[in-house]
Image 1 (cartoon, rainbow, N blue to C red):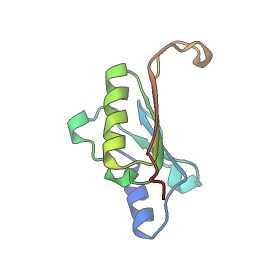
Image 2: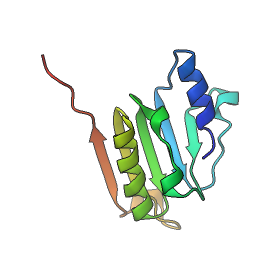
Image 3: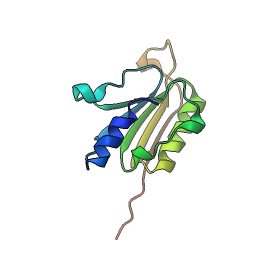
Length: 113
């Protein structure tokens, strides 16, 4: 996993990104150098090795090249304590507007007083 250490450092300083993008395909993770959205790359990582605790109370977008990985990371982000998670299976070679892969959307329930 790449790009998550900077999120952990920011959280240690009392800051948190508004949104975290987790991409399960090769991508740039130098977001912190340019002030861009926090981006984490999980390409090539074993699912069992992913530790998403840095996502506690964060809104997360997950994109993966297989449905199985998209679903597994969706569940891991929820279990880690994310505030909201949107995930999708990105189908290679298909225009973004013509995608038919799996998608999931979840938001943590808020306790009402």
